[in-house]
Length: 256
Ligand code: ASP
Image (cartoon, rainbow, N blue to C red; front, side):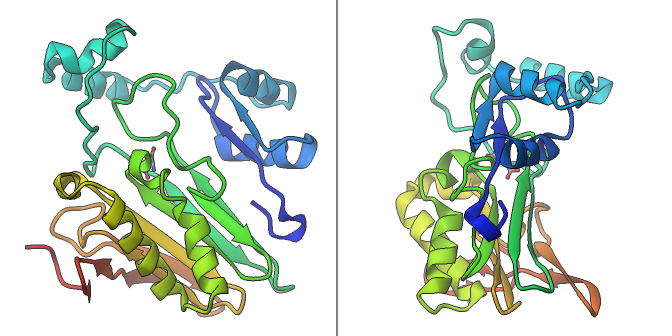
């Protein structure tokens, strides 16, 4: 998403072609549309000169095999027979997801944001998460700020979190406060029994260059570690320890 002109481009459901975020940029720059999906997004990418490439690695194939063998029949049924589904929520583990979200501000004061992912593992084919959805996985208002998110997209996408972070900044909140408020909103909406397996993290960049971030748990990515986020400025790259939101407080210590 590019601040000037409020421009955005997205793709989802792409298979057999890498560099999804670059294809999304072409949607933004070369079409009158915002969001292309599935086979037609793939055809668009090929027409734009992107090369097809098998994305399944041997380690990925083995991980899938291992996961499948460790599940009950009903939990894998949706891959074998589309008429039968498990309603068990997909667990968010350190290995099961890996999204990159970023926000940028240039010397002219223009903002941009990007969000790219292969999505949570072991999903039903066709499932789209929060990441490519404008307002959910990322959002930019060039007069206010930018935000991006990662985590359990099936819950996050119902709360329009990135939009909420930017709106919070527009209403006067500091970037970190804006992220904390959005996550508290999310946690009020998510059933408490899901909080155990549940994770979400947000980053924010305000028009004046101030940054902030927050997560729903201390070890967002790696259990027993405080999660970190990165900021880059004239002073160089800094890895920061992120705060996390518990019921009523903001904390930086590890979960029990
Ligand atoms: N948000 C992504 C999804 O739900 C996962 C992630 O953040 O890594 O697909």
